[in-house]
Image (cartoon, rainbow, N blue to C red):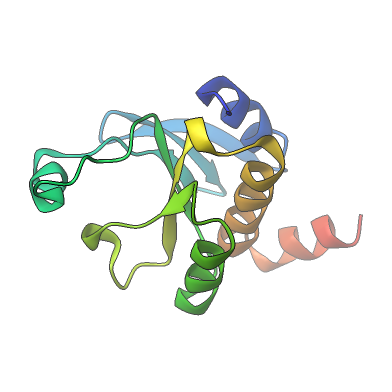
Length: 128
């Protein structure tokens, strides 16, 4: 299990990250681009679950590079990583914090950071 405070610590450890707020929820940005954010379910999301019980929160959304990476990430971590119809066609995954451990959470945040950071910053990070 990972807490939102631990997600914050992990996200803020990457270069040029700031914490902000979007739609009233905690968001982590690199050079002004959101790479991870707290993502509770909206009323519409809950309606789409129908008779299924939605995953328990807290939930964090994290960007991925593209839809192929999204599919790979979802296949690799099916107990903690998931998606919803709202995210169809969008390169991001949802992570159920009470089902993820620190290592895959940090790796997801790093992938999100790499997907959103400017090329020069990525190059400097990868060659540090």
